[in-house]
Length: 196
Image (cartoon, rainbow, N blue to C red; front, side, top):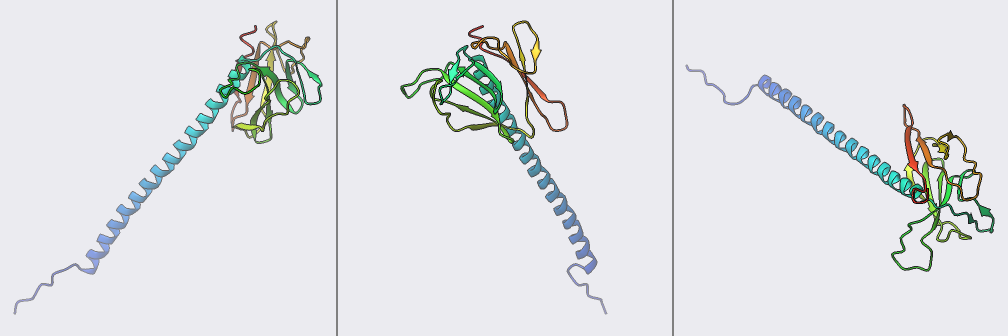
């Protein structure tokens, strides 16, 4: 009698096939997870770089357009053209405020930069004298308070800004932004380049 051969797979062949398929599927899943993580990481990094560039653009433009013009607050108290310290990191009047809607206001704007414990924030006022500030906008998230230094006309850097005249501006401002696990990022911006 001739033995019949059964068509199909044995249990061992089926287990080997399943093991190979599981290995390939696991590798494919790991590769997919790696590519998704890489894409998310790149997106976060790109968004952080965009925030830094936007901040740097606004920061340097504000300082470059600083005007040697004293201002008054809502209570009518006079303030020097450029202030540093107190509740605000910096407070000054700058030019170049576009009036695209034709509102009844000057091209000057009083600007205030503060650190609110989480981010550097910027607020402006519609008028340089006697106006309440507009709501602040968060410009750059930070884990710790930034540092400031000021360069005077004699070329010396100072940790505090103490003007001799009400309309005096520093030549440059150095902003030290804390970086996680490293040296702070140093940004040096010229002040009032149109007036120096």
